[in-house]
Length: 419
Image 1 (spheres, helix red, strand yellow):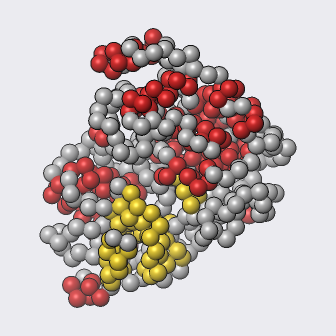
Image 2 (cartoon, one colour; image 1 turned 120 degrees about the vertical axis):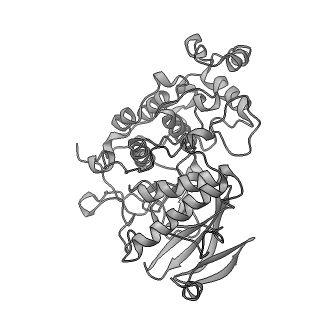
Image 3 (tube, rainbow, N blue to C red; image 1 turned 180 degrees about the vertical axis):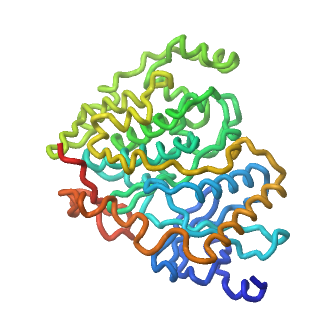
């Protein structure tokens, strides 16, 4: 494409403190969020005839860490295709050459709210268990491609008013792990598993801990382990769950073990004390979902020793979750990640920049003859097809709207199979 033609396709607009240079197909940009990784706007896509989210990656080439994260996010978003993982609709840069290249824009499905807002709602058992089921389906799909998230949190999980849930990001690269004795952090680590906090080895069920913390917050309405830094985070965990066994402590490296062993010992509280019946909604007549089942699931997820913690597959089979079990969702084909050394790769900023530029050009090449994904109404329109309408899919009158922009309260459009 020649320079003049390319320039005519783009226009500039100020969004908060940032300037977006976007394709003219995207109009009505409105800021909806920002974070360490970038600024996100809502927009209307005149080609797809739908609302979308546009994320401008924040200074992707300022250092190796940012550049690696940008590359990883782009590669994984291009590969993953599951109803519980956010879909990539487009990727572009307004710059014309590698030398000029500095901005990356990701266009994604637009959802209604993140889970932080849903946590403030009074959810019944159906909605709570269905949201958890979808989290677990999305995590299982990532695990099938060898992607272990390790940094799931409510701000990175989004929902629509029909109770559709999607995971927004792909967590920590393996080389980005931090241990207990590192410097205090700025980002939220309330949901990170003990093995991540303590700098231990980890397995796939590291993500189950995070789901347990999120579930606990949905039940309680407040963060379960609100640590102010790595060390306080660990203290909050053992104060409530109790000091782990000597068997677990022997798995720690010497310096971390010395610190942990010198802490006061805590007996911890029973799950009946941590999560009394009064915190839960009334038992469900329709699906026979009960507070006792929800509490049992929490007790199996929130286990400090990962070797004794429930797995994703076991969680999906748990009585509180498996009423929603659908093989097409749980056992969807795994994403084909072509870059098997994705997390181990190390490059200079300039090398990362070239790799990212090639990925953007590859997307443009693949979409030149038509749109890969995101035909109108093709993604995330409903939770299930018409054969699975839930009898409770009328307005959920006991909830407030998730956000003022939502036209209806959180409703279920999926139905568990009949017993």
